[in-house]
Amino acid sequence: MVKYIGTRELQSFVATHSVERVIDALTGYIKADYLRWQQFDKTARMASHSTVGVIELMPISDGRLYSFKYVNGHPKNTAHGLLTVTAFGVLADVDSGYPRLLSELTLTTALRTAATSVLAAKYMARRNSRVMALIGNGAQSEFQAIAFHCLLGIEELRVFDVDAAATDKLCRNLAAYPALRIVRADSAVEAVRGADIVTTVTADKRNAVIVTPDMIEAGMHLNAVGGDCPGKTELHREVLDKARVIVEFEPQSRIEGELQQMPADFAVTELWQVLSGAAAGRGSDAEVTVFDSVGFALEDFSALRYLDEQVGDDDAQSIDLVPELADPKNLYGVVLGGKPAVPAPLQKVGALLHA
Image (tube, rainbow, N blue to C red):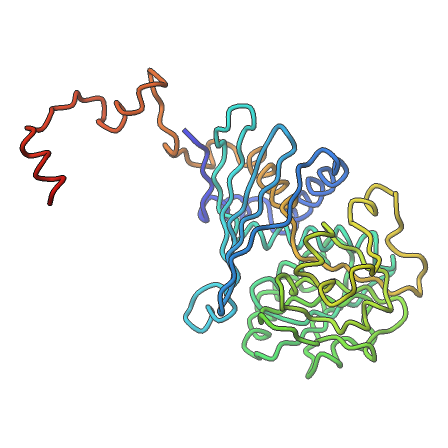
C-alpha cells in the first residue's frame, strides 16, 4: 500500500498547523536539501508546450529517494473556472523503485514557492525591509504575502493587479492578518515606489515588462516568481543588468527564467551557494538584488519529504497503487484476482482475433 495525501488530507493538516507554520517548516526542509546540493542528480524540467499552456515533469534524486512532479501552467483556465496551475507528485525509494508517497502538489506548490521566496529573501533583502509590493494578486499571492509578513517582518503590503477582482479577493483573505497593512495601488509603478521588496507573481504566458529600470531604487530586492517558462518574463532586461541575480538551477533558469533575456555569459549565482555561505546574497545595502525564481525540482523533493515525514499515517490514506504478490513472478495471477483462468474455446479466440 502507498501513502496518499489528497487535497482534503492537506487541508486538514494545514488547518491544524497554520499556513505560516507550514511555510516556515518547509523553509527548513528546502534549505537543508540545498545545503547538500552536490548529492542530487539534477536536470532541468521536461516541458511540453502548446499555444495555451505548458505541461511539465520535474524529476530529481539524492540517491536514496527519487521524486517527480507533474505540473501544468494554463493562464486562460481561470476564464473557464479552472486553476492556472495544478500538480501532483511521487516520492519513491531508489533501492526498490517502489513509490512510498503519492501526493497532491497544487496547494503544496504554492506553499513551497512561498517558502523558497522568503528563504532567499532572508539572505538577499535588506535586514530592515518592512514594505513589499505584490504585483499579481492571483492564486499564489496570499501565500507570498503571509510568508513575508509572518516570517520576514513585512508590515506594509502594496498590492496591484490588472484584475481588480483578484485584488478584492486578496484583501478579503488577508483580513485574517490585521497587523499587515494593505495598500491598494492604482498601478505597478505606484505599488513599487518606495518598496523594500518587490514580488511579481503574474500568470500571463508572455514576455511582459512589469518592472522597468526607472522603477528600481537603491537597495531593492526583487522576487521574480511569475516568469517560469520560455517566452514568459516580468522584468525589463536592464533591471537584471543593474542587479546581483540569484537563480535556483542555472541551466533551467537560462531556458525559462528572467535570465532567458540575457546573453549566455551573463553572470549569476545559484541559490545553494548563497545558503552555504560560498557567495553573498547582497554586497551592500545599496545593491539591487533579483531572485529569478522559476521553481526547481529540489523544492518539490523537499516538500514531498516534509509531507512524508510530518503527515502521519492516521491523517493520510493508503491506496493499492502497486499490487501485492505472494509470488512476485506471478503478476498474471493478480490480473485474474487469484482465480484460475478458464481457457476460451479455440474457435472463439480465433473469431475474436479476426473481428
